[in-house]
Length: 384
Picture 1 (cartoon, helix red, strand yellow):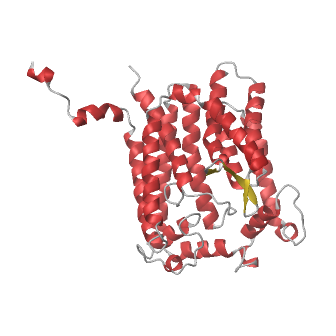
Picture 2 (cartoon, rainbow, N blue to C red):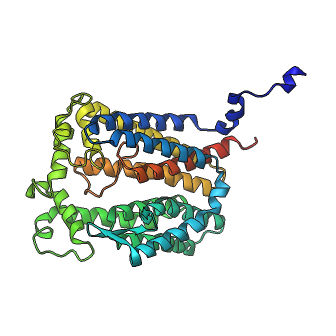
Picture 3 (cartoon, rainbow, N blue to C red):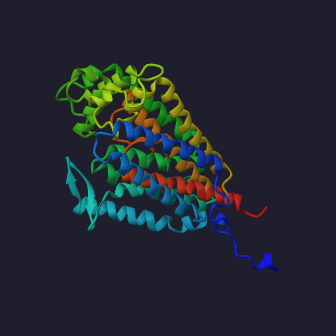
C-alpha cells in the first residue's frame, strides 16, 4: 500500500517526455554543437560577445528542437498549408514594403525586422510533403506539375530580392521532397547533363564570358561577379577575390594536424574575412588541419545518414518525405559552405550548421532537427 501511495520522483515524471528520442541523432547533434562552441571560442574570443551569444543561440535552438520534437507528424501536417501561405504573403510584403540593405530588399519590418525567406526553408518541404501525402496512391504527372508551381512561386519571389543563395536552398529543399515522392529519372538526368555541360563551357570560355562589359542577362551583376571570381580569384586578389584566396590559404596552412587550438595565424591576424560566420570553416581547418576537417565531415555525414534512416522508417509518406528533406538540407548547408570556403563553389553566404554564428540560422536548424526527432519518436512510440 505504501508503495502505491509513494509519489513518483522528478526523474520518473520527466522520463516520458524524453521517451522515444533517437539516441544516435542526439549524439551527432551534441557532438557538432560542442565542436561549434569550441571553434567559436577560438575565433570569437576577441570578437565581442560572439561566443556567449553563440552559446545562447544554441540553447534557444535546443529548446526549439525539444518543443518541436513533442509535436506528432500529423500535427505538423496540419500547419503545412498555413505556414506556406503565410510565407508567400510575407514575401509579397517584402516585394511591396520591404527594407533594403546593401542593395537587396529582403527584410520586413513588423515591429520586429524579419527575413521571410528563412520561413520558406521550412514551409516549402512541409507544403510539398503535405501535397504528396494528399495524392498518395493517385500520383500522376500533373501532380508533379502542381508541385513545381508550389516550389516556383516563393523561389521566384526570393530570387527577385535578389537572394540567389537562399533561393537555391529553398529550391533544393523542395526538390528533395519531389524526388523522393517518385519523380522519374527521365526528368532528372537531362537538366543535370545540361548543367554539367554548361559549367564545362563556362570554365572553358571564362576569358570571354567574364570579360568587362559582358551581360549575362539572367543574373545580376553581383552574381556574375561571384561566378567569375570563383573561376579566377587572382584577377582581383585584394578586392573581390580576397575572401576566396584567404580561405584557401588558411585551409592549406593548417596542414595535416593543424596549427592548434587558438593558434591559427590567418585567423587571429584577421586575414580571414567573416571568420565567425561564412568563413569559419577556413578558421577551423587552419587550427585543426586535414584530420579535423575530415572528422567534421564525418560527423555531418553521420548526422545526415541517421536522418535518412529515420526518414526510411517514418510512419507515413508525409513523415518520410519531410524527414528526408530535413536531413538533406543539412547536407546542402554543409556542402555549400565548405565548397565556397574551399574555392569550388561561389560565395553565396550560406552558414555552416552548428559552427557559424547566427541566431536565425541556428533556430531554423533547431526546428529542422526537431522535426527529425518528432518522426523518430512517432515511429518508436507506435504500438507494436
